[in-house]
Length: 251
Image 1 (cartoon, rainbow, N blue to C red):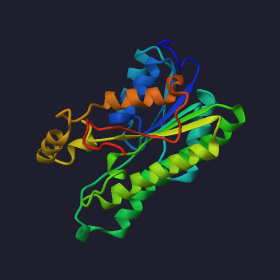
Image 2: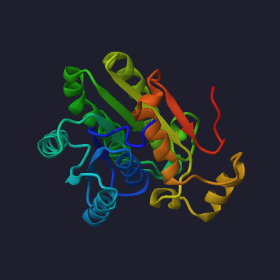
Image 3: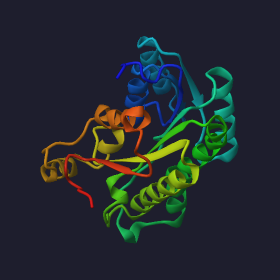
Image 4: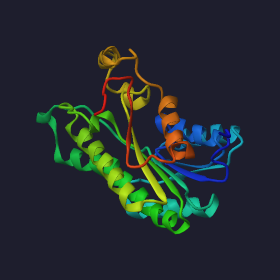
């Protein structure tokens, strides 16, 4: 398979400025895709990602949008199409997470996390799917989490949002087929700013629980995304790819 297997394709990566999103942008750029880097607030990080993409000899742009805002998402997709062309590849990587005891849960927090993690997946998917269907080609990967597959008593809101993302992707895969493939990647704990927020003790415990005895790197998740967007996964849709070092095994 050519290392430039995505040559001529345009990819939109939400939450593309840091962590898994940035690693995904770089992996797709290395495969020849044009990259739209979505960010919500950290313009400097987005600019750094664009610079790294361009250093790989790939065309890139950054586009600011709150993925939970329908108008902002619509404007984002239109801007990408004007500059880079129709979106062929979508990766929904924007998300937020937190650990909290059920006694501390607030409805406002619930609403915000569902807005970012679930609405922030639904809206970009809906914004690009009609064009993909009209062209007869589309590849979508939604970043979920192993928290969406197993009980997480200290992450009720986050776990619920990611389980919903998995259900959304599964249903869209059936609805949009056969021309659009839709899959999920469910990472375990990854070495990112979000991952570090759980604290050193939790990180060590989770690493000890994993068969591989470590946490993951963003680049390892990006490779899963690249595989699912490429024709190497041409018979794969509606699936959830677990990448967590062995802490969660399916079924």
